Length: 234
Image (cartoon, rainbow, N blue to C red):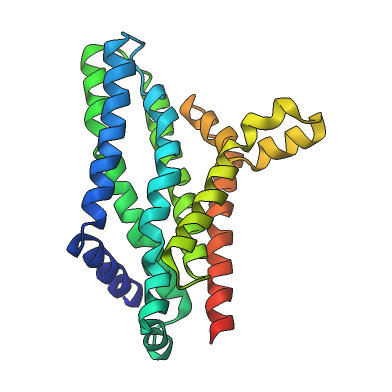
């Protein structure tokens, strides 16, 4: 229940300010442009792989923008001290804030469902690939959210939190594209820890437990570090 209270508070904060509306507007403009360009304008196959391919790049910028304030603003305004004295565990605070960003993420993803319905009407898409692609988007976005919250807990400056989470999230995603320029052993390691290699498996319709475990680890570890940061502050 305490987590739910934090969750409702943060969701209300998102929608009482332009943050949520700007996030959803920019996200849907990007998605709509690439859906129209690659699926209809170029007459490609009935799939959303082109949309799935561009979404992580949008996430890497937009998600840090919505998570940067979750702890930084509390620190800047001094309300983090009030939270620390309330009978609410650090875990409940972190989970509530994390779930609020995931709620906004899920809302954005659900807004793209009409794309899937459209290609189902005009073509015969691989339903398995669509479902696994959406699962991959959710897990990837959740990992970006966890990283953003972690960096937000490090500093009271929202811009610094944004830049750090953007840099780390972007780096984790693009590392797999650099493997061809590196020794095989290094390339294999970077490919393994890169978001993109695990996400692309899902966009092809493959849900491997190793990829799911990887993303769950990429979510849990930043949240664990966030909890340690709050304990250290106390």
